[in-house]
Length: 238
Image (cartoon, rainbow, N blue to C red):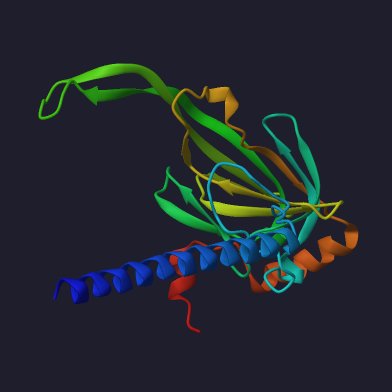
C-alpha cells in the first residue's frame, strides 16, 4: 500500500513539474512574440491639435467643415500669439449670444461677422478650503487658490452692427502650415490650483477677412438669414 502511494506521489510531482516547465515556456514565447510585435509597430504620434481651456473633440475633417461657413483670417490670443488661417465653428450652428441687459439670446451667423473681440469681465482667485478632519464641519483654508475669470465677446458685423454678450461656442483654426488649433469661447473659466489669472490664455481678437466679393456674398446671405432673436426665429412658420 505504501509502495502504491509513493508511486502516485511521484506521478503527481512529475505532472506538476511538467506543468511548470510548459507554463514557463509559454510565457517566454508570449513575451518574445509581444516584444517582436512592439518592436515592429510604428511609433504613435500625437495629433497636431493644440488645446486651450475646455476639452472638446475638434472636427477638423473636411466633411465636418462647411465650405460656406469657413472663413479666413487671424486669431490673436491674450498671450500675444497670432494664428492665421482658416477659421470656423460648429457647422450650421450660429453663435448664440446672451444679452443680459434684455435677458434674451441673439443668434449670430459666422458668415456675417467681421470681427470678434474678447474682454475680461472679472478676474479673481478662489480659495481652496478643506475639512479640518473626517466628519468635521469646520473648513480650513489650504493656502492654495485657483483663478476664476469671466468673459464677454463683442461681435462686429459686416453691416456695421454690433452684438455684445456672453457665449459658449467652439472656434476651430487651421493655420497656413496645416496645424490644427481649438479654442472654446466661454463665459467663465476656472483654472487649476496654483495657477495665476494671467496664465490662462483667451481669445482677444478674431479678425475675419472681408473682400469686396465676400461682402456681396454676405449681403445675399443677410436677406435669407437676418440677425434675429432666437424666440422670434422659432415662432416663424417653416
